[in-house]
Image (tube, rainbow, N blue to C red; front, side, top):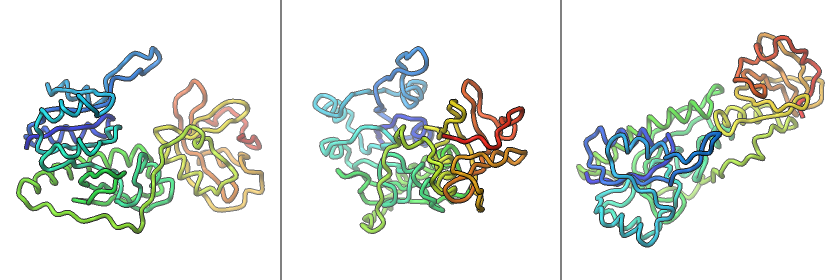
Length: 307
């Protein structure tokens, strides 16, 4: 099938690879313009742009999908457009160009977690499952009819990094299946139910600072959800520590929230508003992420309090 692909971050690269491997004719790859990155803030192409260039595919990087950019897309005459975490809203004029419309890989079981951060919000909320939905895009925010979906469990060990990779693999397989079903005339649509819709708002820098007055379950889920980005943090003795892994434990610490009540081979136990947070991996300023027991070695932490 004659395709246009639109995506930007690493999550989208696997889908581009899968469609290319399936033998589809990818006549254009749309992605965000080059952005400054690293210490030198050098302009770098997106992960999707880099992979498309490696494969010899034409790359387009419009700031907005308007005017000449729409006509440029129209000239490619795609039968279908596949969109994965592109980063730009597609106006109706773009949605109308491909004969078969625009398919999107969304990292949740719609209508739950429409919006920008479905992976992190699912973990943070304590969902026990999530998955991937292939949907036909409309003018709304992740409101189009559903084509295929498949679920995955979320466990007490699931991090944002792990779930990202699982959903990336699942999504790349499902989009190839969806296109194959479309070609055979066997793809069926169903409307999203209105009941159960939730919004996965974009992550903010402010929310990743740990509030130790919250219940331990909520804190531990947030720490796992924000691994690897934007990474939860808290201050201890005037230093900002990045917190990578944690589990919640029941019990009354008998100490103010944020107080370290134990530091041993099992990790660093911190009093929360309800229960204990067992830190399992953290990072001191200037260092690398470490097992919490190793990070505590040589330091007297019991009785210290996170701010």
